Image 1 (tube, one colour):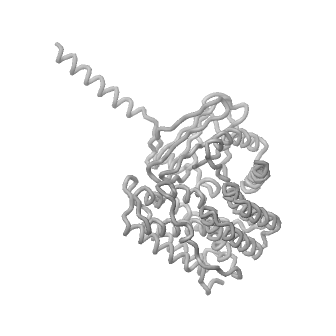
Image 2 (cartoon, chains in turn purple, brown):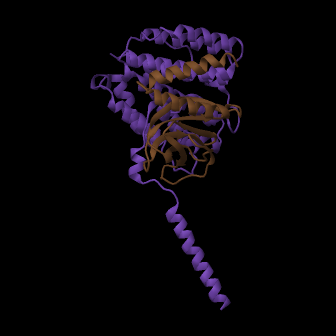
Image 3 (cartoon, chains in turn red, purple):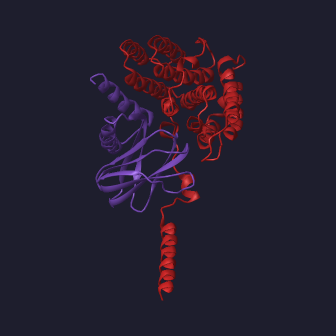
Length: 270
Length: 143
């Protein structure tokens, strides 16, 4: 009788567990596919990425600086991509708490934005960046950089340049991923390495580029970046629970480094 | 702190212009969400300069995809306005499974807190529990 009761209890528990599992809230594949995706909320900022990277230990941020870059590009797509990359550089300088570097980058951001004709309110942003940098107000500076990026994007939209908005985000994501993968390679830690897993994000960026006007999409640099994103999406598609190895991180770094090189130095952009 | 105010206000204005023509109701919903998200800044959370506004209706989940990084902590704050009376927020992983979150509910505003161990895409759901169809706005914070 006792055994029977125990069996009954076990069976009941199993039934209840299954019932609970069946009732556990779950979204269908169709619902997941229909979830809204937007540049303003679905693409993380470089600041978010760098915050995650810092968790196991502060990386050598100054070691991730790159040399001065051109601010005289003529091609608008190339300017937009480099603007995104420069804003990511601004976040790096803020993480490094390097006020002079922040001011230098802030100045370059304004120059590139002017080249796109979106600088009406940006001059005051540049002044704010300088002031906050001089006063070591690092948290406020990070907010100011995000606000600057959004102001650039907002201005692009009002100037009917909305196709360029995604390119600013792309430039920021690529430069951010280049820096993070390089920092992980220098001081490998599984927890840090896990931040590189972003297949859905790359897929979304890729789909947004495919939505821009055929003319802009056909430009050599944009075409090149878009084609290389296909390979990068595969490289960042690690299994969810497994951290990428050093070798896998190196492959990501090489791939994004190649795209960044094209963004910065491609000369056949129309 | 005084310097933060202009930045905060400019974020509001820019966000409005970035998302195109937002209705007054969406602006009000965003203000409610910002009030809630502001509370988390006291714990060191940085508010993401971006948001999503939309509409919720009874028996319809509003779903928004976000991409999160392992190691970070997040709070997703949602605000709505009358005639919506009570909302619920939840978070799902990329397989569609609901993840365990910290929850805050206060009628027309609600939030969930989450610390992902895996990076990748997650989906925020907003559910109208009580009241009629209305506008809502989602903002998130991280540290």
